[in-house]
Length: 352
Image (cartoon, rainbow, N blue to C red; front, side, top):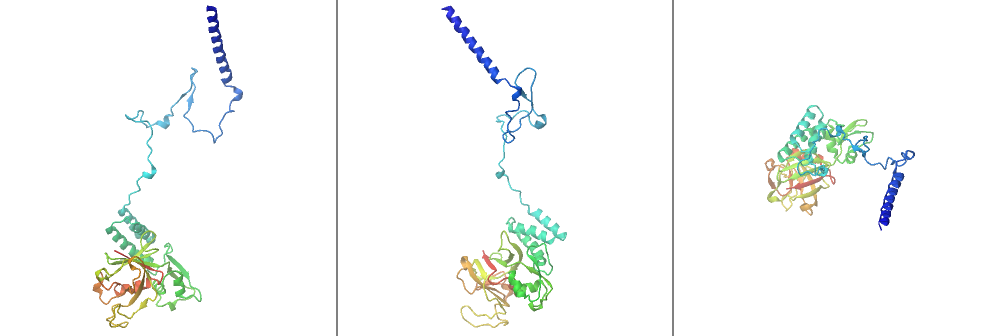
């Protein structure tokens, strides 16, 4: 029995030795195979810190790259998991808008003669709606003063996207040029110092503005803001403001109107509800010197008739609710607005 047990132990030891020998044989690195298992560049993983092999025969230990860890704490705060904290970029706060900085930048550009950049800086802030009411008023004043030269003046500003230069050739008519750019012939006369469209001369170059102009009327402010591009908001360029008078008993409908056909100079007054007709140029004509008809296209304005923009023989009514629902301006202002607004192109948005 003892001899049989000894044989079993010897057999077990022999088997174990065989396994060890086979393992060494099959897994021993072979110099002839060096480099045959290298990954292709696109298969390789991220580079690891460098390693050194010591003389003890132990597995290599990673050596810390000192330059990569300089300045980092050697111990973690209590309760820390050791994982880095990653801030989600979408949660990052946008830069704070500073109106004072924008005003200073715009003023500096203006003082250096770069009127277009100065105007654009302030106009962008105004269109973005980032200004409080006081700053917005200041911005409109700033932009309006510059646009009196850039848009409404006779000087050409090639850097302004709304400014264009047109070479007049034989046979060109001012009305056709105006139609091409969605403005009126009267407006082109104003910004080119022409007393009438007939004064246009071949081989001359004239200033043109890419229109049309639009109007936003604020009932609470009694003001009408003129814009290019769109009727206020992003993509618009504020031009100037006119003071207005509005309808008594809140009778000026809000909504969007379109400038209708048949604008009139020196209009005859036909009372809406009957009465005495007042001739053009009559001192008692309540329409003053201009009539700009409006057609309701959106909001409360839809379906409303006989509404328009006109002058007045009562300047004291400007800034008050005294009309029968129309929008009125002093005669000097309505004459300029008449030259800006284009039939079937310009819109008038009335807001509270």
